[in-house]
Amino acid sequence: MTLDLNPAPMDVADRSAAGAANEAAGAARLLMCAPDHFGVDYVINPWMENQIGRAHVTRARAQWENLRDRLAQAIPLDFIAPAAGLPDMVFTANAGFALGDRAVVTRFHARERRPEEAFFRDWFERAGFSPASWPEDVAFEGAGDALLDRARDLIWCGHGWRSSEKAPKLLERIFDRRAIGLRLVDPRFYHLDTCLCPLPGGGLMYYPRAFDETSQALIAALAPAEKRIEVSEEDAASFACNAVAVGRRVFMNHASASLQARLRAVGFFPVLTPLSEFLKAGGAAKCLTLEVAAPRAA
Image 1 (cartoon, one colour):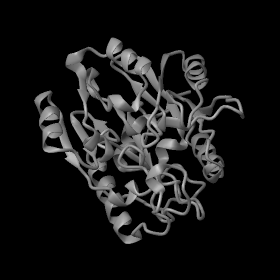
Image 2 (image 1 turned 120 degrees about the vertical axis):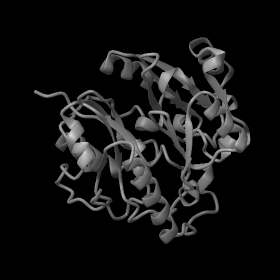
Image 3 (image 1 turned 180 degrees about the vertical axis):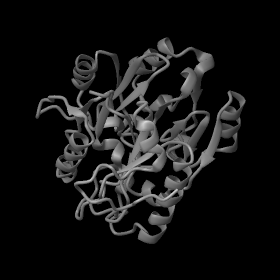
Image 4 (image 1 turned 90 degrees about the vertical axis):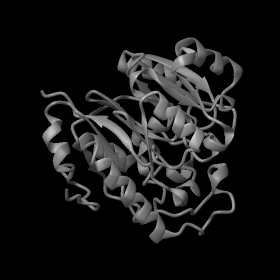
């Protein structure tokens, strides 16, 4: 399979052959952005502390390509062209949140990332999505904080650090789907996708201490104990929850032997794809992808 890592900015047809074949059927696919301009150029989360200028560009490219190649074997991929001066654009999870043919384009909390919004809006529009209206003064950082749980037919929505507590209700109205707000309390886990991962079949992998007590109780009420996989602080700090689940495969930066065994025991297959360079900026596998589904045919 040949993948174009640097599509022209105006061309949204650059996708894997598998992606083109599945689009008509509305199959899920992932949006990625090559790390041409990746680096740690500022500090907007705790992982970036003392990391400015320390990202190893060649190693980051190799790690990203390894993730891309492994994902391409499991799901169609799309690509958005990277833009100079936007080192975090590689983290496409923050482009927005898309469901069906509607999309909410991110309203970044961090001013350093706000220039990305125009590029992501352009991609959504040219790919056939209809961007929904969103208040200018309500921060929302896309699928970093909004995770679709198909098994429960709901959207988990994190808030407290980068997205507003108003976001869940807005998402609920736009997508006509229940949205559950979860308050994040540990600054290391500033986005929901760093500490919670819905798994196919109703499983939920998460780090409980990233949430306040009310949110922990909500999770427990909606996900029965046999479906919950609580990860240790060590695994959470390795971004084990920042994973991409495709079928029974779970693509992740790292997981302890214990966590891998627990995943296998319930029918999942961990696929470790080391992403140490991206952890310096506070992201891993999930942060580097955005799940979108093909817009419905007119």
